[in-house]
Amino acid sequence: MSEAQFCKAKLSDIQNMQTLVIPEVESGLILARSSDEIATNIRSYILAKEDGEIVGFCALHIHTPALAEIRSLVVKESKRGRRIGEGLVLRAIEEARTLGLQKVLSLTYRQKFFENLGFVEIPKESLPEHKIWADCIKCKHFPVCNEVSLIKTL
Image (cartoon, rainbow, N blue to C red; front, side):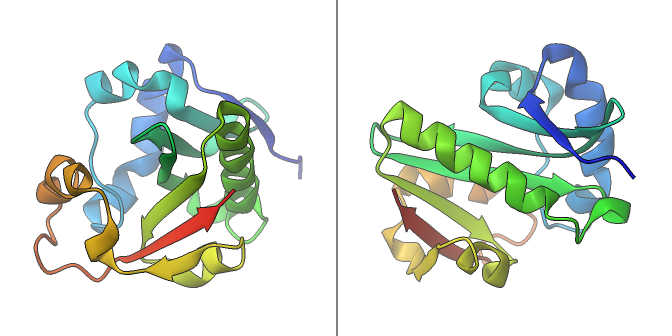
């Protein structure tokens, strides 16, 4: 079993990213994003690869000069439990620090995972308003949402 290698996504990775995320989108755990939307934001994505295969990814989406969000975190089901998700999040946090951001947020159903990485729960009402209308409105669970909002101060 090889160890995951982490890298920035390329446009040529989009189709494989879309294939990997299908089960999570269908279950409602992750929002669907068009290939065009991923292409527009390709610099936000960090990949985990094993033997050239994408086994996970996440995006660091910047909302303001002080705040970014970790979103679209997915790890291939057969690769879970090997700290690949943690590696992705830690790389996104390091990128946020390098960019000079002050806080990173996450909206998630996996509260404990993020708390183990130093995130703390915050009221959803404290989220930037544009987040709700830009992303949440696209979700099949909107407006009755069980996601937890968490934040990490850098």
